[in-house]
Image (cartoon, rainbow, N blue to C red; front, side, top):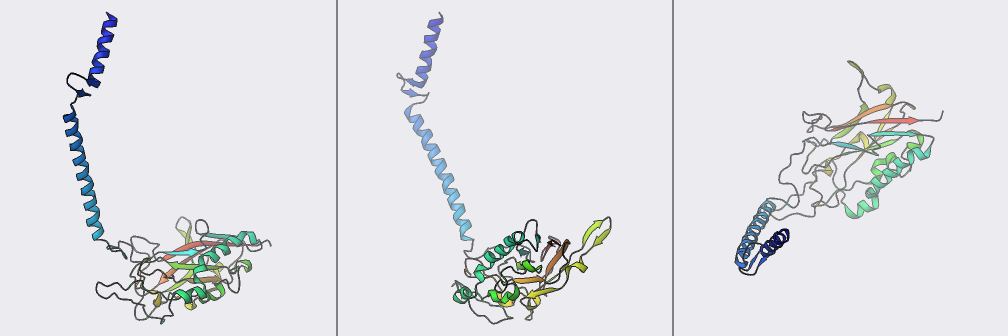
Length: 296
């Protein structure tokens, strides 16, 4: 009896897989399988067509050279080079191994600013006025030209006269750059924005604040007055302005206190840019810690 049941179950399974009487495969005839496959084929072709159409319409609304909509802050961010970890520059003046990585990072960062390379790829522009390059209707004026920013502009912080960028002498250079914002005009009436650095206030206790103004010492700025000249603006985007060289400001700490943590804040000053807005209180400014140790 058990064998008969087993044979019966085996036969039913075989008939479900292929029934020679009805010519059904897995319970369906060939025409039934064909209709199902045709339905899913049409369905997925329709989905793919909708996806392609949606992408095509979206791409029609995009500009190849600049974003259609920009939701960035009106105030650009700032960053320093070399960055160090957690925006801290800590080294021993008398130990070259402790500061050599900073000098190497600056060498790499400044390599595109070589004077001869700038002369080959970029233009000598008229200072203190915007380098505007308008399109002619729908005809793109691309690629757009860029103004030279020569390494020698950074003078004592160029690495040309002092390959250690002052780190070997306890007078380090820190480079400051503004984040790129397409179309930004950072000054008016011929007044270029400039960078100013000073001691940063920090909290040391409940309701008690401190700043390292006595430790920061004398500062030198390169270019003079720490300006981002107007001729480097507006920025038209990486694709439209392929040779654009971002302007820099170098700050050299001439007499900073040794063996002391000095908290520093640099900010942009402009008659069109407001710093520390409600969305980002650090917009237009950057803070970092500098500590130079000695073996003495």
